[in-house]
Length: 480
Ligand code: ADP
Image 1 (cartoon, rainbow, N blue to C red):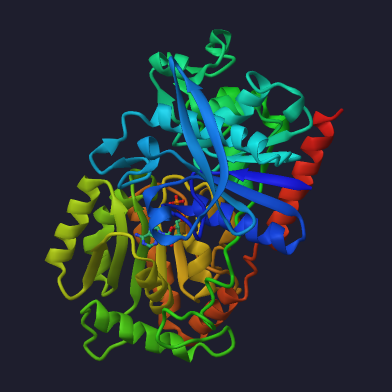
Image 2 (image 1 turned 45 degrees about the horizontal axis):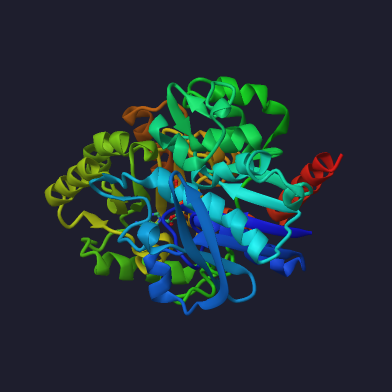
C-alpha cells in the first residue's frame, strides 16, 4: 500500500504540538511494517536550518488567482518531501507570531494543498491513499474531487484526521478565487461556514474517511458543546468517523534510555526517578526543606483549551497544600503574564519557564511526581501518556483522550493509573489533587501506582494497524 501523509508538522522535522508527534510516528511505524509511506510538508525556515535536504530537481507551479506561484520539491531520506516556496514559508513561525496569525494563511495553505498534489504528479508517487491532517491540508480531498478529478487520482482514497476541532482554518470569502475552487462549493453543504470559507470542512466534506484521535473525542465532536459549530455537519458523516488513539514514540520517551535525564530508571526499579527529581528541583531553584514535597508539573501550550484558568485559580490553594509546581509552556500572552506573576509570588516553590524546550520537558516528565492536565477539551493529549511512561501520575479532567487513557484511582481496590475529575471548576481540580496527595502520602500505594502507570502500553503499533485497516476500507469503497 502506498501511503502519502500530508501534514503541516511532523517530528523530527518541525513540531509545535501533538500533531507532529502523530505524523512523525506513523511514518516510522509504516516503514517498520514494510509499507511504502511518504510524507509531504511545507519547507519552513527551521527545517532548512536543521536538515540537509536534497533537491529532487522537480518543480511545481500552482495557479493562485491571477498569478502562478512556483516552488521546488526537496527531499530528505527516501520518504520525506518538502515544498519550498520562500514567499510563504521562509518565516520566523509556522502559522503566526504571538501578535496573531499570518494574514496570508489562506494563500499559504492553499499553495501547500495544491502543491502537494502537483508533487504527487511530478514525482509519480501514485499513492493509494492520502492521509490529510488538520485544516492546513483540508483542501486536498476537495481538490481531488474537483480540479484534480482526473485519472491520476481516480484510484486514490483520502482520510482526514481531526487533531483539534478548535482550529478550522476560517478565512474571508475574498480568498475563494485564490483556491480556484468552483463557486458552487461555497454553500453550507460545502465549504461555507457562517459566511466564511472553512478549510477543515473542505476536508471533512470530501474525504472518504474521517478520524479523530480518541474514541471519546470522536463522540464528543458530534455534540454542540465540543463541535465548534460543525457538530450538525459531522453528525451527517458519523458513519465514516472513527476514533484512533494516539501512541507515543516509545524510543524517544523511555526513562531507561533517555539521554536528557540524569539517572535512568525502569518500571521495576525507579530509584533513579528520585535522583531526577532532586536534580530538577535544584535546576529550578525549588526549596526542599529536607522534606518529601510533592512536585506537580504542567507542560503544554498556554491556551484556553488547556484549562490554565482553573489551574491559576486553584494555584494559591495548591501552594498552600505544600506542593511545588513547575510550568513549561508558551502561547497566550495574558496566560503567560498571569503565571509569571504567580511564580514571582511563590518564588522558590513555583518555577515557570516560558518557551519551547524539548530537553527540559524530558527532565520535567522524569523528575515530577504529578502531571496536571485540567483541559477544557482534549482530543487525545500526549502529555499524560508521556508522564505515565515516566511514572509521573496524571491529574486530569475526564474528557476526550484523557478519559480513554487514564484509569481513575480507586483507593479501596488500589487500582488505577491517575486521578480524574469531571466538572470544569477550580474546586473540582483541587478535590482531585487532594485525592492524589492522600495516595502520595502512602509510599507503598504510590509505588504501586507508579509501576502500574509505567507498565501501560502506549506504543504506536496497534493504532498504526487501525489506520491501515481504515485506509484499506476507504480504498476499497473508492474503487467500488
Ligand atoms: P497539543 O497537541 O494540543 O499541543 P498534546 O498533549 O497532544 O497537546 O501534545 C503536546 C506535545 O508537545 C507533548 O509531546 C508535549 O510534551 C509537547 N510540548 C508542549 N509544549 C511544550 C513546551 N513548551 N516545551 C516542550 N515540549 C512541549
